[in-house]
Length: 450
Image (cartoon, rainbow, N blue to C red; front, side, top):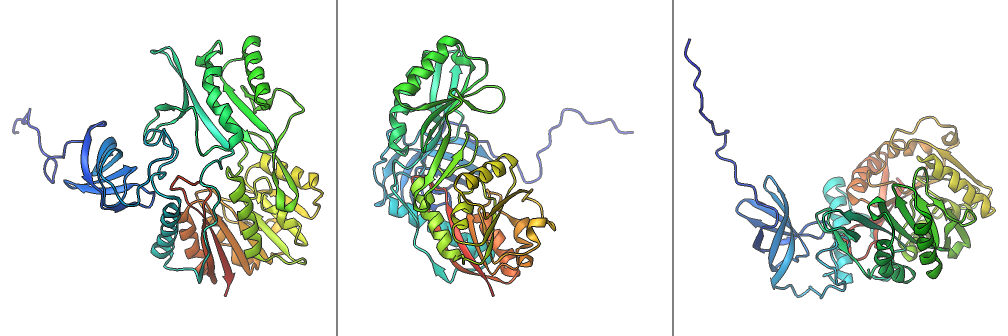
């Protein structure tokens, strides 16, 4: 028996592995084109670089944020040769804060980018183009965000409380004293928040802060240990100065310090008031939300004698305006607390032709009691995962018209394949600019039975 050979090292098949690029390394690059998420794409020495803050045709210096295999993620540090499309970033924190990744593009170019992203997904994945493209739904490009989560972290080494938003491509916190995309009522709160939090006795026990602007202004503080009386007094004084409600989130669910206080928002065109609590999903862009609801109703064209299904109904954002126009709305949501909240919203708005049900909409539609009578039309507004299991059974409900509101063009395109297979045709589609200054795309599509 031959002795084993020790101490030898063998190269894996395919030759030696390329050295990994270290985080922080700077590299000069020429940007070839834009990716679907708005990042610039460059190619160098067999690697593909995705560069935040770069535009097609530019020569830039990029700093590496991370690398895996032959893909490198980076951000723009300097621009040597700028695109004609580039504009000065409106925000002083551009390039560091991870919130607004395409603010160096003019707003009309941002809309064009999002339109291309939607069209490319529908064409590549579903092999279809709508019979009609709708104009983008958009509003003001700044001062639109009515809700924000502010990161808070105690730096034990520096003995300092960090307050701001997450940095691009990392968990670092960028100190923010003003944010141009926040609605105006939240701006003074944002600017004074860090100094107030620094005064609290146990800053290391703070979690995050959420800001809300609707029918009331509110500040929610997540805390890991009970607050002292002195800290509570500081928080209450801060909120009183800004005429804001104070909500605390310790153990259990978030609660208002004043039990009589409530949060909500109005859908003004329909004279509706919707209540919500921190943790509930609400669209952050009030103006585009109203335009979206109006467009959905126009496209769905509900008639007074019809029974309509609203899937992923949330708080009733679509269901309640629909209920003003039809015989009956059946609204379904996966989260039980949201179902209860939506039902309460219907009652408080004197709408009694709505029925709300809880169901796991990531699973195929079963023979639920609420589905047995069928529907003339369906509206669905799923999360980013889409609604593949739901759309597989939509034709069996008898719906002739379907409006699909999407926050992910990739899953919309995937679900379109199934809808076309069931005999629906894509009549109309367009983007919803819910998040200006970002590459995030929301879309709406109208399907009709052939």
